[in-house]
Each structure stands twice: as C-alpha cells, then as structure tokens.
Length: 208
Image (tube, rainbow, N blue to C red; front, side, top):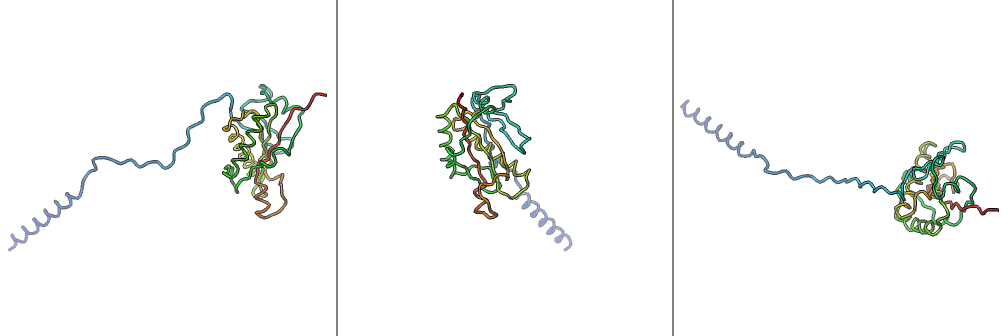
C-alpha cells in the first residue's frame, strides 16, 4: 500500500514538472518598440541665415546685442551700422501683424502664421530696412521669468522668419518682459493682448 502511494506521488510530481516545463519558452525574435519621440534633425549650417541670440534688455543700462552670432564691435552686417547708429523707427506699418502667444508659451500658433508670412514678405521687399522684434509678457510671474519668456518669444519669431527666407541678421530682438503692457488690466482680456511680439521697422535716416 505504501509502495502504491509513493508511486502515485512520484507520477503526479513528474506530470506537474513536465507541465510547467511545457509552459516555459524563449522567444525566437524580439519585436522592437518604436520610440514615440524623434528629435528634429538640426538645421543645415547656412551663412545666410545664421540664427544666433538677439538682444535682451533687462534695464536701460543693460543691453546685449548680437546679430546672427556677429558682435557689432568686431563684425559688420549690411544692417548693423544703421541699427547702431541713427535710424528711423516705424511702429505702425507692421502693427496689424503683432503676434500673440498662449500663457507661459513661446510656441507660435497656427493663427499667427499668415501674419509672419506678411512680415517676411515685407522684409524681403525692403532690404535696406531692419526689424526689431520686441517680446512681451502679461503681468503675472517674476521679472526675471518674464524677461526670459519675452526673449524666447522674440527669438521664436526671428527663427520662424529666417525659415521663411529672411536673413536673420536683418532682425534684432528685445525682451521687455512685463514692463510694457499694451492693455491695462488684471484679467484675461488684458493679459491675452500683452502676451505678444511687436514689430518695429528700422529704416536708414536720410542724409541731411
């Protein structure tokens, strides 16, 4: 009797072992999981549209300005002498093309594409002129944060225009942060008009 019980236990154990072994298998191949994010390829180098940092103004005494990666003290561009010297400033011609941004964003919205196409067409047709892009923010946030965000907004527009074929050296950028609201107020109606890039056309001053 004991022998039969031991044999039963042996056969049951062997069956379980074989059953478990049959469930274990190694895959013959591995299916790769696609990466949902592919970083954009870097733009090809170009001497015509060398997009470098623009100007950031923290105060009237704190001005940094480079154009297309060129320092005015050591390099000249077709526009640098005029920009740094005497020139006229036209605030009206491109005023209808003011670009507006969402809260905490420097991303250019689809609704603003046509405006920037108009600005690019203007600059291509006025090669003697330059453009100052002024980045602005609403009143919320710290001064430092808004100066940085205003700079990002101005540089985003500068890069967009360069990608449309404008020579980036024709454009200077300035950040005023929240210092220059277009509309006074403390609600979304005012804030939405203050999150913007303004366009100032710089033209050579006629010789006397």
